[in-house]
Image (cartoon, rainbow, N blue to C red; front, top):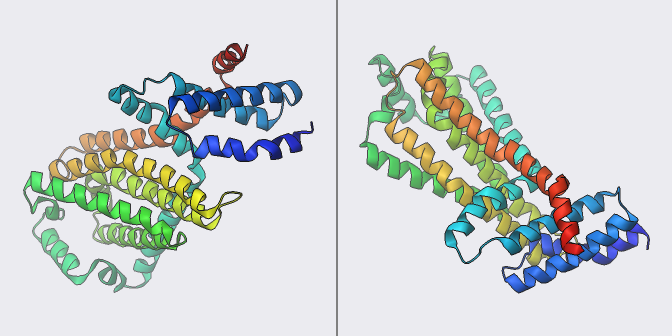
Length: 328
């Protein structure tokens, strides 16, 4: 059989196994058996083809699903963070990149606009916030806004607020992705104006060392929430060979997994903002350490680890041997 015909005959089935995976152990085992059969055929007749690599990865994921202990809730949670979420992240790395470029692009646009229009910052941040900040600067405490509330109350309020905003960004993807893009635009413009304001006051570096203690995780999570919204919107706009409803369900499932993964990130960011950022006079080395640790975690878990995990699933000789042994 020609490779093209082989793919056409089985593509719908493979997509179903990839995006609409069953949670029933018997069905998962049946799916795995069919995938191994298809993988064996592909390795025999198209050993160097990308479809063979694709099937190997798909079968490996199915294998992990069979032999995970689904009866143990702790095991299920561990598997979600260890493999399920990172593989979803990897599958949508391009959308995360698009969300990042949209957000950063609008932030740069905002800073450029602020540099050429003195009224721009007040128009974006509001007169009340600007005047309050200028009063704090005059008092010698430019970041006093982070001390205006009880630590625990501030932590809880910020966590709830940020999680809510993120889910709104995600759900806005149903508006043909335009809702998500609009909210990324608004948040990017606010960040650009906010950061540029402190640079105009000679507090640019200090603002980075203070505000980005919590901002590194918070902004990263907002960008990833934007990617979840784009996943949802694209599943509506481009269903491919699926029905639109099936496509949206698959997009919503992947997007929701990303959003669940972001909740601890928002909680950690809110904790830093409520309990740590208020200490604006902390040593620079300590602030840099917190910033570096936050950025390292984000890059590792959402960029490097998903790539490494996918490569180990699709190309690892051990995984391939495991599949070949099962087939035999």
